[in-house]
Image (cartoon, rainbow, N blue to C red; front, side, top):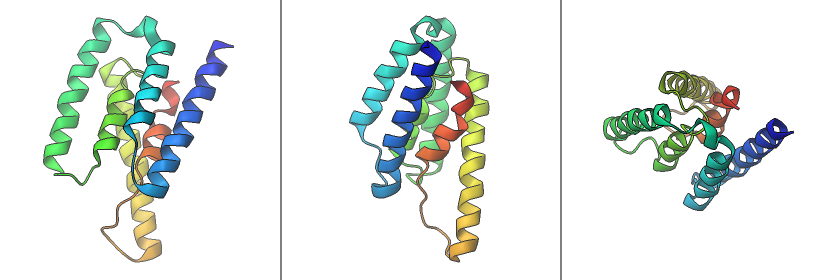
Length: 137
């Protein structure tokens, strides 16, 4: 029953946050905060030293991405990746799901560029983050 509740909550937040990202290209801090609180409450027993190390490593990587891509990756997406460390408290596991998110987003970006014949337009990344981390729930 607990697992079903976790999946339902994850999918509910995934739909709310993704809808906002798709329609307005914005991930609200309020939605992220509620998702983070929900995530912590469900995964509290896994949040130990390994989790803290994972958060530190993920934070360093996300700061590097922000600096390297100079704002082309939205801050809401980076904060969402950070919240996802709660669902995947082991850094190497988080890194795999992180990579899957980028792969899925990249495939969509290439396909939409070929279909729409325009390059450089932004894509809503939140749905791909949630899909990439789906195996973590």
